[in-house]
Image (cartoon, rainbow, N blue to C red; front, side, top):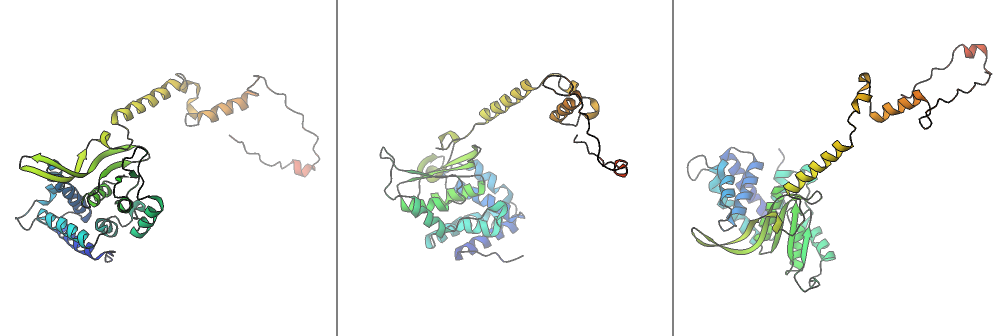
Length: 313
C-alpha cells in the first residue's frame, strides 16, 4: 500500500495514533476514525452526550487496561489540540482525505488557500443583518468546515452554519469550529432533499452534571432548533401516502382487463397505438379507404423480388 501523503506535519502523529487504535481494537481504520470522532465530540459536550460516548468506545474496551484501543482516545484528542495550537490548519480534514476517504464519492476537500480566497471575495468583515444582528453564513455542503473557518476569520462576529450529508464530515466540522471558539450550527443532512439526521449547536455553554458544573462547546440539539429547513419523518410519510393515493386514484380499475394476456409486457401507450392502427382513424372511428397503387414502372424481374417491409410495432 502506498504511503499516505499529508499536507501538515502534525497529521502524521494523529495517523499513527489512529493506526494503533485500529490494531489494538481489531477494527478497520475507518471504523476507528468514526468512533474517535464521536468520542471527541462527546468529550466536548460537558457530559450531555454520554450515551453517544459509550456507544463510540464499545468496540475498543477489550484487553487489559493500558493496552486497549480506548486508552489511546485521550491521546488522539490531546495531539489534535496541540497540533491545532501550533499549526492552525484542518488537521482532521487532512487525515480524513489522505487516509480514510481517499476521494471516495468525489470527496476532495477544497484547499485551504482556495477557501481563503473565496471567503475574501464573498464575505464582508463588517457586514450585519438589516436589523443590526450578527450575520449568519451558511455552507450547504461544508465538508470539514474549511470555508466556514475562513469566513469566520474575516467576520468574527458571524454565526457559522454548515450542512453535509456525511456524518464524519459533520463531526469534523463541529470539532474544527468548537475547538476554535466559534459559534454556529452543524447539521447532518442532504441540503437538496432537506432530509436531516442530527444537528449540533456550536458555542460555549455550561451544564450541571452529576459530577459538577461542566463547560462544553458542542451540544446535540433537535433539528427544529437548527436554522436550516428540513422535512420531518411525519411530513415525509404523509407526502409519500398522498402520492400513492393520487396514483391509485388515477389508475383505471379495469385497465389491466383491456390488455390481452399475451402482451401484458407491452407498454399501454404502445398497445393503444396498435389498436388505432388496426381500427383505422381513431378520431372518427372509420376506416380510411386504401389508396390505389399507381402502376409499377419496374421490370418484371424487379417485381418478382419485392423488398421486405418492417413493421413498426
